[in-house]
Image 1: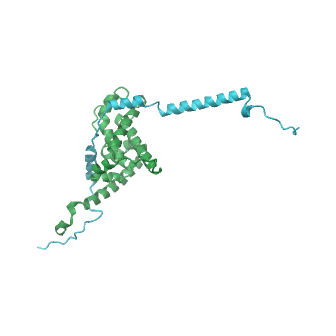
Image 2: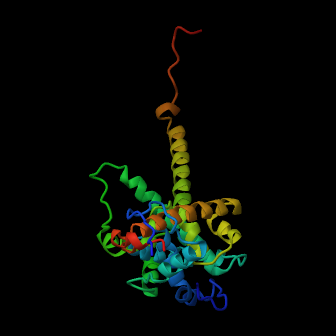
Image 3: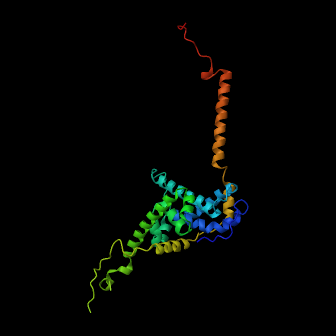
Length: 184
Length: 96
């Protein structure tokens, strides 16, 4: 969960807001892009944009939700650009170095399950389960109706449960050597 | 004592799918294990702010205004000097 104490005013206490919210914004963004290095760059960019817009912030939502909105939108735009870049001729497109990601993250079944979701589904799942936001709050962050959020969460949960279930079924604890005694 | 036989092929698509609570816990644990390598870097934000140019909306507005001024000036100069399509056109002599 996020460690939000008192709500800080972005216009006058931006530096403190940066220290307070950096980690949770980073994690929310990483939940969407799944690449650690890109998530860090996008987190910095989020705070740069938020700093420029700090005087336009209206306290209808907590500053953390405002920052997450900027960050998630940046992350989805980043992935859209990446997808677009993949259709460019090979000479113009240099794919990102995913070796670190493959090494470090492929072992993690939850990250693998998250990777099977679309960025919009991932955003809904991370905001719901990590940030603990309600459907209405997620709807405000993503700029979609609450009903859409509910269906995205349900769809994402179904895909992830299936993915995690099949991963675990094929895991070592269900190896063939113990087959004969299972079921007792 | 009889031991019930269980086929030793793993079951696909499983009855071991995690519950909603388990799934939520797994996601939270995974996300909370993510730590940034570089960490918070306020000076990096300040450098980015200093290096970044004007915001896009300001750039586009200024460029649009400049284009309007250039087109207007070209029209005024062209009509004042009677050059190009703004100059007097020859009238065909067979028309009366």
